[in-house]
Length: 588
Image (cartoon, rainbow, N blue to C red):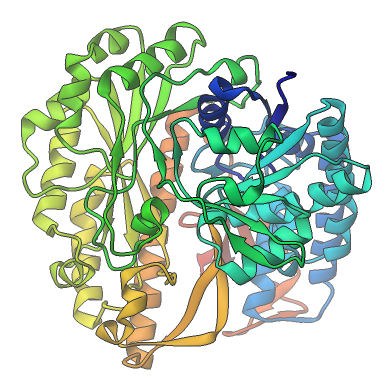
């Protein structure tokens, strides 16, 4: 019997996934190849960002930005929001993307904000929706042609972020219109976190045959049988599908999450794919957070489909070390992202025992996420360094012990500082993530955070600044009153992984607290920008500053066109991508 060919497609737009492959094709290859299905891979996301860097698209984006900037400068009076848009447009026009330079990329983001402003951001957020529609239609047409050219029997779309669902729907529509009759499967974190009503709508829009909301870390014979045409969707363990009436149904066949990996992953599917430098390839270490108690976090749900069930799966250290070795020796990749919600402190000794020190000698450099564990000791960080770890991300979230306790983080500010200090003493750089407006933040916590921020900054390489978002799968969503929240049940918003964030109001919010939280946001964003600028200047020559004089004078709260113009914009600014100056003095 002929083996069916499944093409795994990673659709646009996943900005953080252009330096190396996703895990989804590797995991599906592991799950299905032993059971009579040939798995192939098309990184449509990478192709899309390559298209964005083409001369034609760059020229179109640059030309439209110039038109938008001219339009913004036409009124005689400009309010602060108008000036912000002008500053953004002018800074975009000075970027390497618009000036025809080399575009740099990293997992933390992209150096082509201009393309984001007009094409990558959601339609409702761009200044010219019709421009976006026209160019994205061209991109989707080309990607669909490439999928059809490869001639798959079936297609699986891997959607890690909600930003990929729009492109998935567009590609599916084009495939069906072109006569594609194979099965379409949806999976990924965005699918896991989508409620049944929204998932039904997405599957109908995509003409999808099956979606999967559980972990896939092992062999999956029932899905293979479905792709071979030997069973129906209802017989695929834990699958979700549409019945003949187009209604969402959950398969009666159960089998638990697929989480039993007994061999190493193969990276052959992604060999030869030209990812952008600096290459950062993923190696699966674990899934699910072993702590799993933080009140704001939906990682437990992602792993177990239960907000209160801690379910962590760890691969054997020798398999992890084997995968790293393949990437270093066969692919020539030196930077490895250990995929784990949080690596336990003791795991690095297991890696060392499995031979990770040899990989470090070959040039492997690892990065991963860890918790600031109360029991962390110097020998844990010594083992990290010995295994080749040179960058850790710590989910700090707050610098106030009362807030950490309310979050149920299970650690203190002293634990955070100790982990940072031990990391730096062992040559390991630190990225810290902060939530500046968690609903447990009060005035005293704002003051404490501002004070402690100065203590933290000497230890961190970069600072991730996050605004609080509440998902229906986070523990706090079940007891919102504990943080003085009222959920607006009829309204939802979006986040990275799906259209499922809840809108809420704080019953204890005051104008003074709101103002102080805004001050804190400015402080942490300024600190993050300065850290980023310092790192960039260490990697390459600093971008020269450009001063653009505007034909306006500042009247205290607005800008007015006329004589005695005194308003200028500096690109880049001292504390942001651009800053305004009045008579040579910084004004915001």
